[in-house]
Structure formats: C-alpha cells, structure tokens
Amino acid sequence: MAKPPELAGRGGVWFRGFDDTGAVVAEVHVGVEEPFAPARKAHPAFVLDSVADLEEVAARLTGLGHPVDRGEWASFPGYCRVHTGDGVGNRVEILADLPGRRPEP
Image (cartoon, rainbow, N blue to C red; front, side):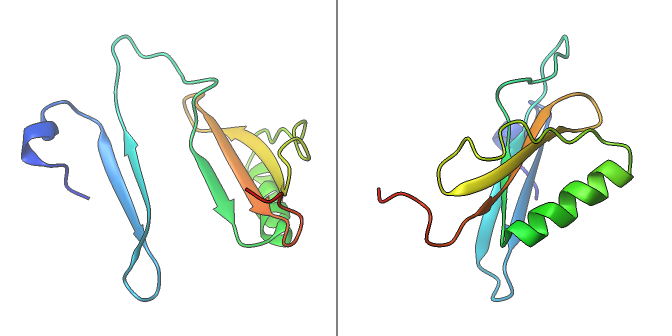
C-alpha cells in the first residue's frame, strides 16, 4: 500500500491484507535503519487458521531451505508456534490457534 505522503520520505514499505469481503485483516509496516541490523527479538507474528496449516507452512519453509525453530512450539498457551527468519535474518513467528484451548482473558 502507498504510505502517506508525509511519511514516504522515511523509506520502508507498508502492506495491507484483505479478506474475501474486502475488509482489512492485517497491516504490516516495515521500516529501515542505517546501519542495518536484523531484528532478532522484535518480530511480526502471522496467525494461521489451523495447526495443519502451520505444519504445512513449516514443511514448505524447510523444503525451501529456511530453518524452522520448533523450540517454542507449546510455550504460548492456546497456540502452537514456530519461528523462522526472513532473507536478511529478521525473526518471524508463525502460529496457529488451538480451538478451545486458549485461556480466558
């Protein structure tokens, strides 16, 4: 998506995702820093519809040569999750809700 003109000069890129009805379901803003240093703790998290989807994405990433860390698979109550990295070393989390197992707020 286009950044507002008053922010465009700062660099980076923004993404917006829509569902089938056209409603916004996600927005990600990616900034830039000089000198570049990959974010190893701060990270985006993408929630998938099912554990089966999570397994499929993890297998696809592994098949493409991207390391997938399952070390925190059950460390977030109500979810299964894995971590991987983007092409320049930033941490990325991918998780799936475990229906009926998420704690009450």
